[in-house]
Image 1 (cartoon, rainbow, N blue to C red):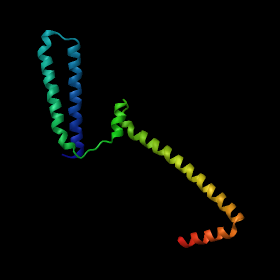
Image 2: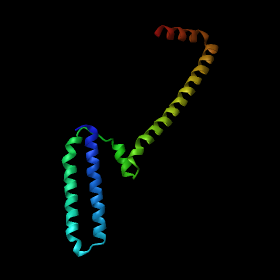
Image 3: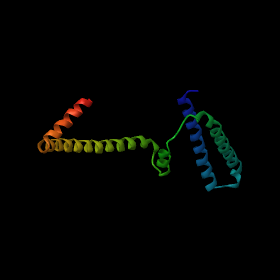
Image 4: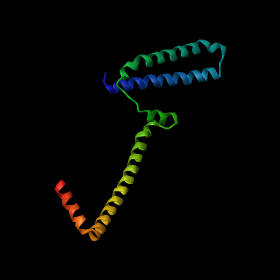
Length: 134
């Protein structure tokens, strides 16, 4: 079974489980004694769906979910937006780092100019040493 099939099968099992739970909630909220057999069948369906999900856990041993995704879900956020938010944070951090790099470049250029004016011999030695290293 390929990766996509196993996820599709698990997704189907979970959707069936959710639907059975939804229907059971409706039956319980408006319980009628004559509906006991139907309620029992739904409960058996829920148990069977849970057992099926439990049996399929072996097919997902190689899957790891980052803890941050689980926190994201716990906060009630759509996990499909996780990657989008992660990329936006990475882009923002990238811009921040680019800004710092530009500031350091400007500082280096200004510092080099002032060093060459104030200490020309030391700065020439620095430049020659740096050229020899590369």
